[in-house]
Structures are given as structure tokens and as C-alpha cells.
Length: 489
Image (cartoon, rainbow, N blue to C red; front, side, top):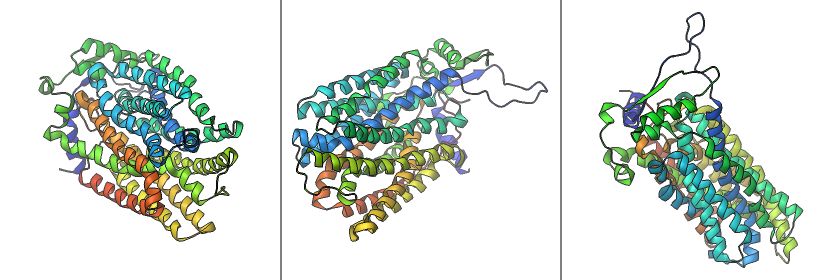
């Protein structure tokens, strides 16, 4: 049995719904026509899913720019500094597991709407916070909503799009995390330029409220997932929602029907009881452990790139004497970070183009190795000074940012939403995201302390090792999902 057929066998249990379409499109001469293009409703779902990833990149990476201002306003020590950096990530950790599974119970659409409403509430509250405690609560609350979006956004895309292009569509939506990161960094720079004051960080969060409200309203106008309706015994509703999803002019298909395969018609275990069944352990390890290892590097480097750059490059003021000096240092770091974040976007474009062609597993293994090489190059900067040090830092971080989004940062997200059965897909993907964010929280909380205690070079060498371990785990627990249908078509 070849590798692809083995992967197919493992994924058979994920095929818990059958969709039957009454006809295939043909040209006038009788030859089979290409599959029809995506409908307007499918593209609407995609765009509304894009927003969640965009807001995550915006908030998490903009916090890196806002951090010096927040630290100055609230007089943060190293531990409190780490709490600010990790609060939203800890919220993502809890939200992905505690709320992401709600999509399996209450439906994809309801949770898709609820999570953004929660995000807007805390986004508004952080503008007016006057205490460190409420600052942490608001950052945690935003993370809670964004964590819920991790599995839900993936599910609403993957359960509404064709199998042959599913990977590219999911990853292109996920890629807007990088767009959000770039936008957040640039937005921070612009706001600092227009308002060079300690309180400028509040505007950084406030400008996201209006676009978030627009997305919130839009999510009310999408159909419920036919997959979810079908596995909950609501076949007629599933057929109705599928017709809405596939509505075209002229109409194609003219009729659809939904049926659950007889061998899966019996009552299934749900939630974590099902997730930790023996036959789900391989996909659980594949989806969770590499993602955890990847987040150790991506979030640690992402949040603290401004701090690292400010300490190693640019004409920074060594001894900050006033607000002007603080803002000047923050502007220098923001410009360098924006340049590096562009490589995140280039990497995700490569992932979108290649995931459905050469497969998720190959890209993830290759990406982990590339991340290790980039971090190793950056670690050498500690032995040099001047232009050589700057060149090594930028070269290493640029390679890391490119390879992480080409490989593990993109592929771990994609794989987690594809390797589990429909009835626990939200729970499985949410658990994987939550487990990954343990790594993100560890680095965000510990980085400011470890940067002082052991230095940048030792940290980077440690992340080289974790990246290589990620490649090994991915290879030995591999399940390739490229081209495999999630609905049994």
C-alpha cells in the first residue's frame, strides 16, 4: 500500500457525510467541462473568514510596537512586561479549546458570529482601560475570541469549498495573519508619527473597531455548514443550506441530496472523549506537537522582534530620557519589523501555491528545517558588531519569516482542520491550536526575562533545536491530506 492510499485509509473515518449532486457539467459536444467556479456565497464565507486571521495578526504583532509605550505608561517590570506579551496568546490558548469545540455542538455559523462580537467588546474596552489589571483582562478577552476563530474559520472554509483547491483557500485566508501583522506594524508606525505620545497605543487598537463591526454584520448572512447539519441528523436543512451555498446563475447543480453512510449512522462519541480515542491519537499528535514547536519560535520572534532590533540595529537612543527618546526607539524598531514581516506574506503566498501541488507534509518538514537555518544565522550576530551584526540579524530573521509561513506556520493550521472526523473536527482543531498556544505563551511570557538572563544568542540556539524536532515529529507522524475529500464526494 503506497503512502497516499495509507493516508486515504486513515482519513476514511473523516468522511462522515455524503453529498450527491444530480449531474456533472458537459460541453455541447458531450465532453466533460471543468468544475464550476466558486459561487458568490463561497467567496463571501472566505472573505469573512479572512478577517479573523487579519485581526489576530493585527493585535498580536501590533502589541510588539505598542509594548514600549504600554510599559512606560503603566511602569511595568520584566514579569508584567511578559504578562502583556502573553495575555492575548493565553486567551487564544483557552479560546481555541474551550470555545472552538462549541462549533461542533451549536453549529459553525452561531460560533462564527459570537466570537467576533466578543472580540469587538474587548477591543472597545481596552481603549478606556486605566489599570494594568484591566489591560490584561482586555488582551486576554481579545485572545479568547481569536482563539475560538482558529478552528471555526478553518471549518467554515474547508466545509464549503472544493477539495482540489481547499488547501490554497484555507491558507490564503490564514495568510491574512501576515497581512494583519504587516498592517499592525505599519499602523503603529503611522500613529506614532502622527501622535508621538505615551497614549498613542490606544489609537492602535481603536482603529480596528469599525472594520470589525462590518465583518460582524456580514457573518449573519452566510449559510450554516451542510456537513454539521447532516451529522446532526438535519438532512433536509443540510440540503437547503447546500443549495444556498452552490447558488449560481444559471443554476448548477439543480438538485442536491445528503446522506450519511450506513456504517457511520450509529451514534458517535463527541467532544474530548472521542478526540482521545486510540484511532485519533496519530492525527492528534501530528496536529498538535509540531504546531506547539512552531509557535515557540514564531510568536517569540514575532512579538519581540522590535525589542531585538532596537537593541542591535538603528540609531537608537541608548539611555531613554523622555517620551521623545522612547517614541524614536519604537519608530526605529517598527520600521525594521515591517520590513521583516513582508517575508511572512511572501512565505504564505508560496504555501498557497504549493500546498495542493506538493503536499502539506513536505512543506512542513522543509519549512521547519529552513526556520532552523534562519535562526542559526541570526544567532551568529552575537559574535559580531556593526554592519555584519545587522546583516546577520536581518538575513536570519528574513529567512525564518519566509520559511515559517511557507511551512509550519501555515501547514500546521491547515492540517489541524483536515485530519479529524466532521463530528469532532472543531474540537480537534481547537485542541491543536490551544496546545500550540502553550508554546506561544511560554515564549511571550519568558522572553523578556530570558533575554536579560541568558541573552538573545542562547535563545535563538534553543529555537534552532525546537525547529529541528518539529521536522522530525512531522515526518514520523505524517498524514498527507492533499486532495482528500472531507465530505466523501
